[in-house]
Length: 481
Ligand code: NAP
Image 1: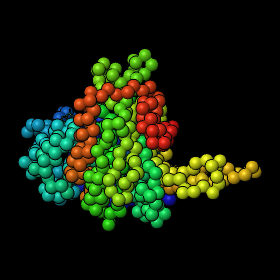
Image 2: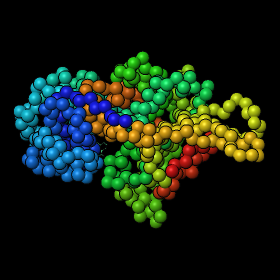
Image 3: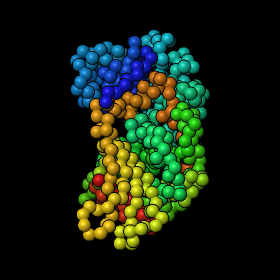
Image 4: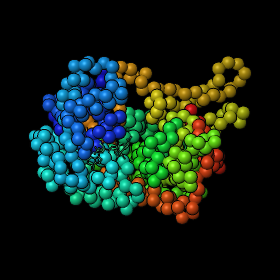
């Protein structure tokens, strides 16, 4: 299968923080892959911006190295790489000072699509927004892209939204949640709303429960200071897991258009019930001898921040009343595995008798590794000896099913959507605020109770209590492997 690449209009993309870690690992190599795929039409340019005193040649060298390390495109010729480096510029600019802004203005073309990627600390978002408008760099068509974290709680998210709204309209603001750029996540919508097969069963009458797992094997790595202020709830649940939950649970939008989709997601978040504290399990990893435990990694022997969280929640609406949603995410777990499992109810009556055991259909949507879907179906165990039942997976790996098709990484796809002006896969201000409004009381609850996270071994499936969260309900988590 050959991928169909639709070129985007000529653009000038300014990356504030163009020399930072995210640019180096994700944004710039991703743009290179889109360039190799022929997606840039006409004369497009990428302008790195940061305080560092780099020349354009220095920046090209930096990008060249980042492509070599993270580009992952063997098929691209040296000539194509040189052509990509040629469209790069660098401007030294300080978000908080006056230096460099006129230089930037002299480079950015008024007749191209203009996008400004804020790949800097959120503390600078307000400064950048103000500088862009006061230096006449951004008109009503310009777009800004902002990175996570979007706020620390409802109050700070509102303040951030207000700062951006003072300079830009909502249709110009692209809040990135890179989970929404993943192929499987979009496929979730295709599967739900493009097939007749699933939708009639997609409700509490047929679905027993839904599990969403995002398990990482890495620890806090070099992000200890940031992570210890956030924890798994703020870093993962409030944004990524919440977005997955929305896409699984939302009503069919009338059209696949930005506000139609985002209106439906917002309704899901607003229908989430407050979480009973008995239904929240927080954990913190430790390692043998604790030399590499969480507290050592963040440099605080008394830290009570969670590196793992599991919780149960409900959605109060007609479709989902009575179907629990279990979410869990954590660091230093047994395997790197992200998936959504829609577990269906038992058949109402077993004609095979009690000895046939309990069998359930489950639709598993794998985000990583090996993006794809599995449908667990019950069949007869082959051979003589009566009717014994067996669950077997109908397995589809996207890589195999779509062999030959280039699947863009989440960042590349989302940046191209910014250039196209398509906000469908970006969070709207009210969505972000509603997500914090649900998250805040949970965090306030454990803070008031002085909750201490349960320790769990690195390389395990998380604390025992998280298993109990399911066992108490007669259910079990799918294995992390
Ligand atoms: P980083 O490595 O610390 O890079 C920060 C960048 O901002 C550098 O290019 C820095 O260059 C520039 N900068 C700092 N102060 C500036 C100022 N006053 N004016 C202009 N430029 C300034 O940070 P990062 O890890 O790339 O993260 C960037 C953003 O992405 C953050 O919001 C982060 O939360 C988010 N994010 C990062 C990751 C990741 O994997 N790294 C993942 C998700 C989200 P100079 O010092 O030369 O100015």
